[in-house]
Image (cartoon, rainbow, N blue to C red; front, side, top):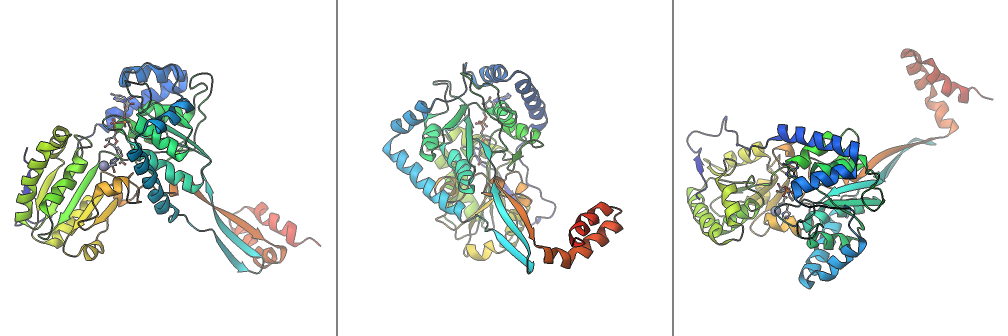
Length: 436
Ligand SMILES: NC(=O)c1ccc[n+]([C@@H]2O[C@H](COP(=O)([O-])OP(=O)(O)OC[C@H]3O[C@@H](n4cnc5c(N)ncnc54)[C@H](O)[C@@H]3O)[C@@H](O)[C@H]2O)c1
Ligand SMILES: N[C@H](CO)Cc1c[nH]c[nH+]1
Ligand SMILES: [Zn+2]
């Protein structure tokens, strides 16, 4: 494996567009629609059939028994329990800081409009399965929902072939967070079950439909989320993970290589990109990537990602060109490893999350920084943001006028009502102000 290097030092960056991993969203959308229709029509029978086909697991019920959740916590090592607990504390702190404050505006005595934030009443959170046991994704979904005050939380995650349940790490994170409603189901069938509900999720108990679905997943999960977005709220659609490291000659090549590999191990479609104005750094990172990929456990998968057309080292003439490219790419994860990362930060316009300097690697944010790891990918950071308390809260305005305040502004209403040809609107005001 040698990650390819593209030298734009003399040609310049005009017209250069980063290739992204090809994802067949079109065919996945057709497959997801078929699964959604089937689950709506046949409920649990359809969920069980699709799960048998794509997960290779035959299930009677998808509802995870409460005992399995508590047993998972008991069976978890003290080290992982401690890590889960400390991660939750940080992520809780990070998300509590996002809570918007209610506002009260008094336009005149007795003329008040308040802005309050109401939590979404029931949420469905997707923790991916597949290549890893995403306990941390449980935390990154559940904590913002809990901090927002959502009273009813259902977690879905694909069953493993061995136990027919989500991995023990996922269940242990649910236990630590006090989540008791968990379903062993993944893919588009999980999204359909959350959006439309199931009259019977196994053992006669229903899965009640949710109001909002969040969480990362593969292309079928993403396609299903976009297909149900007219009946439930969703967060942004997260695709294969991405890291762009913007580094100058002051960066440590071994650390840059370690960070590029950390995201490459997620998925053969993951994108690892280094943008630098230092040819020496580019050469050294290439060498360190080879050395590290040879010894890390998921080296084969990471090599596939680094070999893919979506991964590369880009050599630019100077830091200005590098910053322009980073903004053009809008990476899910952007690392700034420059002589003055804070100064570079001021010039960043697009990124899902930004990691500053040598001691803020992406994997810190994945687990323990206190930030959220569900982040916009594929350039969608131009218009969307990482998961926060926001999808779990709705601002609602409360209008509270007294009689004098209504009299004072009433003519604005009647004049508008007449101008719009809607006189009954005005009459609703004069019925009050002309009384007595
Ligand atoms: N952005 C983030 O925060 C974040 C966090 C963790 C994981 N991820 C990403 O999430 C993704 C997880 O993907 P995954 O596949 O490992 O797990 P997943 O849970 O997203 O998908 C597994 C499900 O896909 C369904 N499925 C598999 N093949 C199918 C097919 N041909 N047709 C229909 N359904 C099918 C199965 O039923 C299975 O339950 C990875 O790309 C990973 O990088 C992102
Ligand atoms: N880097 C992934 C996408 O942001 C999240 C993750 C979960 N576990 C490890 N990493
Ligand atoms: Zn990661």
